[in-house]
Image 1 (cartoon, rainbow, N blue to C red):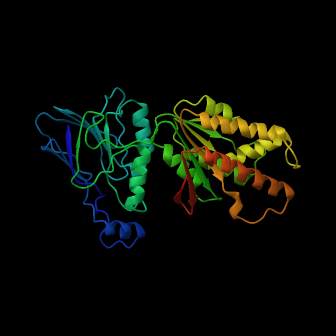
Image 2 (cartoon, rainbow, N blue to C red):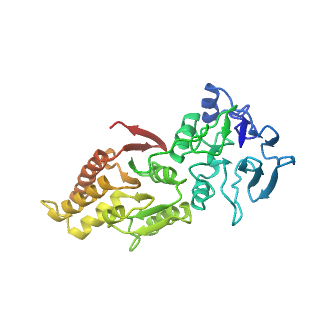
Image 3 (cartoon, rainbow, N blue to C red):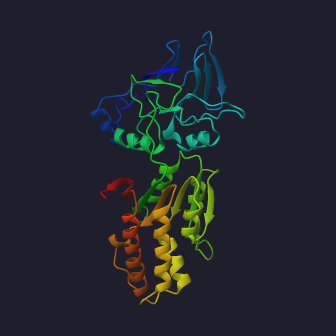
Length: 347
């Protein structure tokens, strides 16, 4: 199957005419994108949000959020427009090409992969690009994280075949990423974004709900609501064991909660030599180093704020700072999230 991408943006293009937002200004520097339009095998035309006209030899099926197109040379799944998430019916077969509005929700790709409808041989491209993302560079970064093609106007996607032109690069299946950031920096959202397109994710939550005040309980509830329903959630401080049994992708949020729980369990808040705490930290670092999955962990960068007023607070800050250094030293990538922007730190 062959898909020529005549345009790849939303209905108004990107940048949108007359729009003064920062995203549209950045998009205008490298050239504009035309409204999404696809020509399949040179005969079937898909306009932005417009159903294709029938053509001999092609079966076009309306499904929730898009179209399922079967032709002589393969199958294509296409989002119906910006914000539309196509949902193939039970029993649907594998697609050769998938054109999705991933800015509306990358978890849709994770679910398609989980169902076996998108495989390594499927060419996936992000369409309907617009100012919902901060810049073309950020769109490119996300496409790499999700393992999809960074499509441009005029590109031609061909399938099937893992090595077909247009196949997107993927983050290695065995990788360790540490996501650092201050309070409300967007670090948890960044970690979730990185794994949103994975078919299998084990979410290790270290924050304690028992005895939590209303504000903390609300934050935990917001995190739960934001996660895809098929992610498996485990609430524990035995993070080393969870990493050791990892199968698929693992997200640990976060290391500050883990450290506080372990310090409670070891009675470490008084300071001084603490062999029990250090053994737990050593076990965690060993599991992190030996992990055979795609692993992302969130941790607080505590050293950028005010000096804690209590000795216990200072002790926690120092222990977490040292823990972050050790995790970063064993990570394939370490990023710092500031005001929702991601900065990759050199190794």
